[in-house]
Length: 434
Image 1 (cartoon, rainbow, N blue to C red):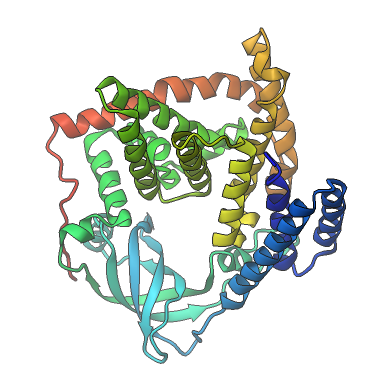
Image 2 (image 1 turned 90 degrees about the vertical axis):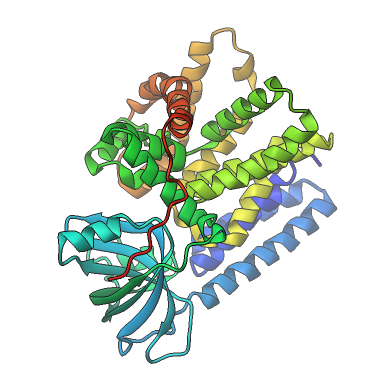
């Protein structure tokens, strides 16, 4: 049954799409075609198991749909919100952040996400928000507005975008009455959002602007640190994926750390348990993006199976990871990052079992793989961005080794040295009120 878990995984994905698209005819047709292909396997256990998983995915996706509703109304004016520091964005005098409601004046306490926009009134106020490194609670007065739909066909639909994040309202804040951080304790410092933001702030303090931008992006998935022009340039030459933490990054960290632990005398048994702690810890520091989740979960499963000497197919591991991601948040299916991450990783796994891996000409092999990955990604890129770059085939041949074997090691070494030779305030927290 090795690699046969791919069938229930794909069927589960299509099942979730049927629910999310309100039984779109194309999703239903693909589902029926795949059922026919599943029947052709003549494996009763596989067919029954796939159908049961399909029904489970349909049920869970429906639960997500039923619970993705708002309980707030335009009459609500006063809110107490909880904000994670890595959700705060400042552009000039404009402050934006996602937050979760703790309570509102006219309803029972509920937990609902909002996107908040606020105009900063002073340089002092701006610096206070820029310095936030911990989860904070704010009291805000303002007006709720519904996000706008797209006015033209194929235009960006902000309302749909927010709904897939389970956000139903825009809060136009008029006043922020208080900004309060709870008393600093060791446990509050260890919260993932606090640790992540404190680390990013330390990088800003210790390195130049350009170095800190790329270091935060490549090591901690902080794509917001790069300016829009740079991101657009990466998109135009087809290497934007290098700025997202992917399986390539995780595999590099994993191999490097395992080698280091073995070199200093740590046993394989101990190394296994260390890695099981390090991988989710690193996932917390990066914010558990789509590619990070896939890479870490796949690596953890493969490590565990190897430790217990269980033979497992990489395609099965990919399938289990896909199913878990869909069950956790089926709305990910609409994300271009999700689509590219899982599709391209699947293609790479399939190609790894072909003659490409035994070619005597590595350059030609890399070119062919890059070409195939580009062809596979064209439908997704064209659908979301209405364009794709052929130069990406050649750019990847140059920049993938550059980022993997030069920039990543340099940034890792610089980060480690910065904490060894310079005084660190990584765990320092300043409580502020205004």
